[in-house]
Image (tube, rainbow, N blue to C red; front, side):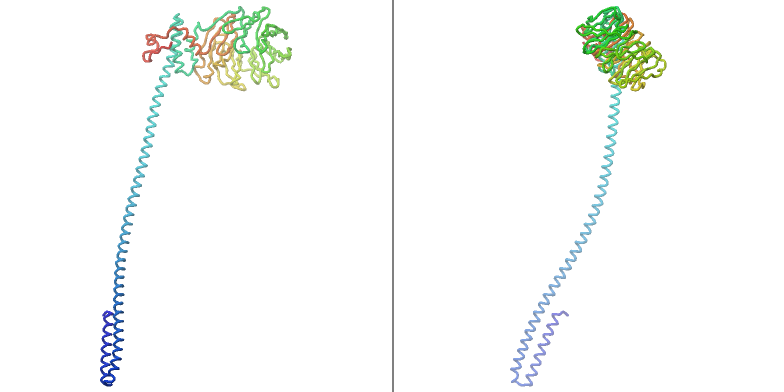
Length: 522
């Protein structure tokens, strides 16, 4: 039974009991007391009624509270159910999110693998492309190399054809072929002094020859200003060569000039019998007597002193005080070649041994034989600190510092007579008893082949050789002087200037070939 019903029943029972009690009391005590009792009963009833009302209110409150509690319980159940549903839904979402995360991770891993595979494929493609490009470049280089070698061979072939045409007295064709040969060598060659091309350009009409004397030319020296040559002969002549014009500076047959040195105030010349003479540019001459012996060479030291060389001695001469200083009696052996470096003076004796004087201290020491091959010429290059030594066998040895052999040049068939450097063109010129001039390209000194650029055969004995700028002068035993222009570009220009026209198209097709497009080179 519910609590509200119980309260009502209790109220009814109490009310009944109260009425019964009132009735009995009234019956016993009389009517007088009825009113009081009724009053009391009424009061009691009133209290009961109030109690009933309170009970009713309490009942209603209880009912309301119960309803509220029921509603709350229902709400709590609903909320619990909702929360449970929310929890289940959240768990479901979490499971779905986890599945989606796993799917995303799998997709990401798959994407990474695909990306790595793509990158690897891209790198492989790049490598393959690079290999293909390298192969293409290699093929192109091979083709270019083959074409270049073909053009170089063509240049040499045309050069030989030019020389042959000149030998057959066809000078015009020889010049055309020489110019065409130079064009291909200039464009595709790596050696501008290639023998066949250079020989084609250095024709007989390019080489200038004059006969200023009937005596041997013993020494040629460049002028102090570097613009002309000074020449001395065995007939006592001192000549000046400038721009192909020769003038006589001094001539007296009692002198037999063997060497000379130019200085700012004039020229020193040494005679065979020991007369050392100074000539000013105004024509004044002063003569100084040296110890009597047979002299053959005059050299100048870096400090300005002169060295008059005889076969067994060297006389030092002070150009400031104009007096001999020292006669070297140590040189008991015969020598004919001297070289002056920036550290020492080298004496090469006829038995193959060497003597050295240190410039800093003046100390002299003798070295043992070089192995029996006698030195016949020497040339020192201050730019590279190398010494070029010409031998009686015709070989030229290139010596580094402290006498270390660096290279040996072969080409001459007899003893070397003289050498000189052409600094402007970086060439070494050598003349020998085989009556040949050889031109050595120092730019290609390290290479085994093609060191000799060309050779030229004289009609007499070459005695001395000198170069200034790109021009060379060679003095002969017959008194002739031969001049060459050594710049290959200048030689080509001279050849071009002497031509009216280049190869015709038919000549081009015959000598060059139809595979090379025809060009007018004139």
